[in-house]
Image 1 (spheres, rainbow, N blue to C red):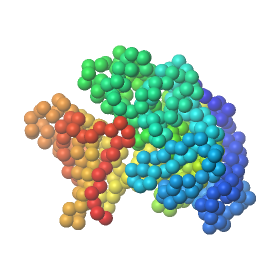
Image 2: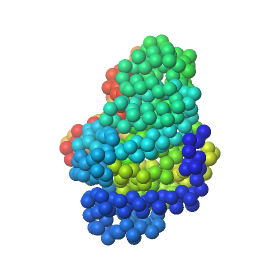
Image 3: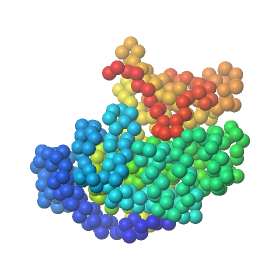
Image 4: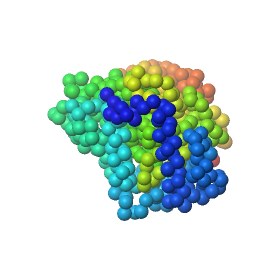
Amino acid sequence: MIWSPKYETMPRKDLERLQLERLKAQVARLNEKVPFYRQAFLDKGITPASIRSLADVARLPFTAKHDFRDNYPFGLLAVPHDEVVRIHASSGTTGKPVVAPYTSGDIEMWTEVMARTLTSAGMSKMDIMQNAYGYGLFTGGLGFHYGGERVGAAVIPTSTGNTKRQLMLIQDLGTTVITCTPNYALIIAETALEIGLDLKSTRLRLGVLGAEPWSERMRAEIEAKLPIKAIDIYGLTEIVGPGVSVECPHQCGMHIFEDHFLAEIVDPRTGEQLPYGEKGELVLTTLTKEALPVIRFRTKDITSLDPSPCKCGRTLVRMSKVTGRTDDMLIVRGINVFPSQIESVLLEVEGVEPHYQIIVDREHHLDELEIWVEVSEAVFSDEMRKLESLEKRVRKELESVLGISPRIKLVEPKSLARTEGKAKRVIDRREL
């Protein structure tokens, strides 16, 4: 099913013509309304009239996360305050939050792309959607809520937490679609096992999961433990919230809604554009956002773009699964380490659960990498010799992928902290 065939299956030449028209208008408006961008364009010698082709986007300045903090809370606002009808914000766990105001037009655009998202995932008005994303300042809850209602599905606004109640509602209300983080999907599966509920006896069939990077191995783990097709989505507060891109049932990359978001891949070190197929940092420009338009936002997410036709019929470019971030990439003894690499290895080792914690320390001027790994109940009750054997195997597998030998600490089942939101996998204790 395709929610908006006019835009989702548009011939690419027509789509690029539309993108250029909207890019020109956005640059002109930002030049007039937002002093930050007016100065940034001036510094680069750019005038709105000098934007003549989509290739000119590479001449525009980047926007970074610190630009939102430096202009906190409303320095990047492009409309009068009385046109703002809602304000969301990021968690602000690494500093001041990103404040995201929306006009009524922005809410309408967001609802439209979320309706496309849920339809692409395989949801219809016949479904009952249990929304376990957090409601509040976080964009997940209300983004999915409005999109689900636009599709015509029955929406259950459970928000996060109270997992046993979530399971009761899945049973009693006949939930068919669950929306939450991948990490929380596994918590739901674990809790169902604890209370003796066979999820295959419910009507649950689809999960629309996102808000944190997750690997193909994690998808296989979720689909083995829950009776769902696990669909990946992508979005971020600085751009719109969820609704930037989504997989279709073919699960071969996330379609970016390019009539609203212009995507590039750049070399994270040089900022130079990279061609289709090459992996690099995703950069996004909003083409229709009114309250908080953004030019060339450096997402720090590592991915690649594929413009080849998809079996679903959409002509939109697809982004691959995010394999890491430029800012959570660890450098340990000079070697680049991504948490997603560690996750992929752990999910291949029998007896190991997909819950882990990475601790980086510096001892006697030398970086040390320690990984705490949960083992299954069956393995934990085995004799010490078998646990030592498992520890050696995990270390050997990780060493072959990472190129360094980490310390492995096997821990009891369910001893690592669970979270209903984004999982915090890395504790970096080094004082650099």
